[in-house]
Image (cartoon, rainbow, N blue to C red; front, side):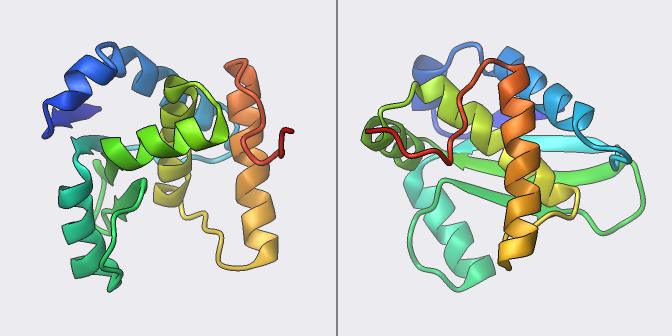
Length: 149
């Protein structure tokens, strides 16, 4: 896995991102019966940078928390995951979850997209969420889809 810190605030927010990302991907792989393997790139960016990507590739001119770009070519490339610091920080605070847990969830989520999973229908969303919940549970991270009062 190649990690590119493209927004310096990430270094202060999560200095051990390499360990966190490695654990997240390892657990995502553990819940898959036949994972696609290959080189993975993780880009840590600002909201402004992810907004540009979201606009250019998804026609949504707003920041988002995570984007995944699968590589459709032959192995050894799997694809890219892009994470936006400000959106993830804000969401973690709004959900009252630890920042590191939310980042871990989004890395797993993005990795599952690279594996071909999506949440376009209720059925595919349920399947993807079940895999996320299982991988997160192995890391002692609560189900991110449960509503806490």
